[in-house]
Length: 137
Image 1 (cartoon, rainbow, N blue to C red):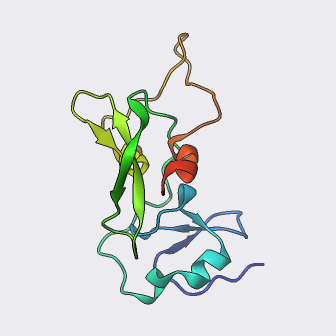
Image 2: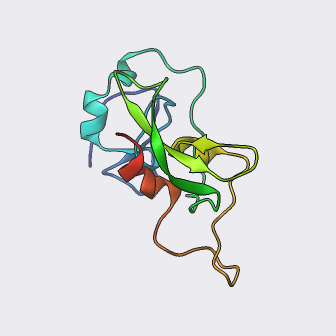
């Protein structure tokens, strides 16, 4: 059994002993799953609880959005601790120009990328999985 330090934002995942879900909006990690080691060094747990938390249980992972384009640059993360730069991607939806992975995951205009036969694209990638590689500079 793994023992996590006390944190106002940690949520236990059913059947999971090595990872927990972090509902803090300032934590940016793949699928919001944190290990004991991440919790122990996280400064967010020492601060006050955020005004709002990420939804829990988490929604099912989204696939790649059909509007998500190529990487175009970076921008400062306004909610991150310290100096963090987020990768920015083109967004081909008519209401948007650019997006980050987190913005894409939460966007009401998100549309699953589909194969020609109408099936969900099964390329093994979700927005969260490419986010882990492409989220930070």
